[in-house]
Length: 324
Ligand code: AMP
Ligand code: MN
Ligand code: MN
Image (cartoon, rainbow, N blue to C red; front, side, top):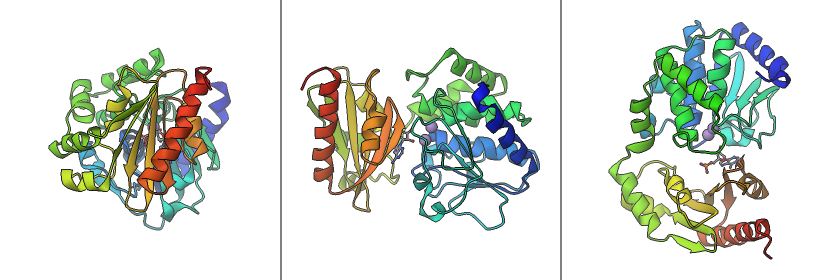
């Protein structure tokens, strides 16, 4: 535990033990870490005898329904909670419109762009996943890591680190993961379910999107259109992990995925190699994230947003290389 987080962490510990009906929320279009953080903390509090509400406004995507307790997550909250907690959220807008005015008692996160929207903010940007923050703190706060919680939290760490391959994975991350395995997490099983296996429709979606893959200099990009989604029969609003495929391209420094949404917005996802901070680029468009992985939702048509974002990102890449 770092000293600077000590007072905040002690306050959160007291709030958690005093609450009897906590509400836990994470961000829209939940990824593995958002789901794992809601479930990991939720199950721990439930095991301590509390009446817990776990809420994700966009529900748990089919590919994460294997997680123990995922059926306990709802898309709406009921009145009557006595503690409001946000996990894995850099800002309150990302939780969903229904919760835009809720006063959060605390927020547990790892985004460097976190705007500290809650009364207490436990934000550890050096951790590669909010699930890793919880794996560290739950035992310190007096909540045992059961095998279910261990499996859930390791899934969050595995998905946000893309299988331990992003640059802020440290020896400490591997120690936390080893501890989760000691507590009953099955690494091989989770790796297969959370990172390797995917549906046929997701594979088709990749195919449609990759057929439009483009590259200019050290930047590659493509898009997922609403039409692609329909043709592939892909139900989720997410990108079926296509960003991970783009980020693996050897000849580039950064990649962008444009994901067309039904509300005339384009979800933009940036990924970059070390030394290129895409969180700053995403912030310029009202989004946020981490130096190597960031996102934003931008109003406009696919073409408008693509042109604007590619031009700006390309200029940042050129500046970082000392070109004009
Ligand atoms: P994504 O591109 O959605 O996989 O997200 C990459 C990273 O950026 C994740 O850590 C997200 O939490 C963060 N992120 C994505 N979209 C936004 C947004 N609109 N505002 C703030 N952070 C975001
Ligand atoms: Mn997340
Ligand atoms: Mn995360």
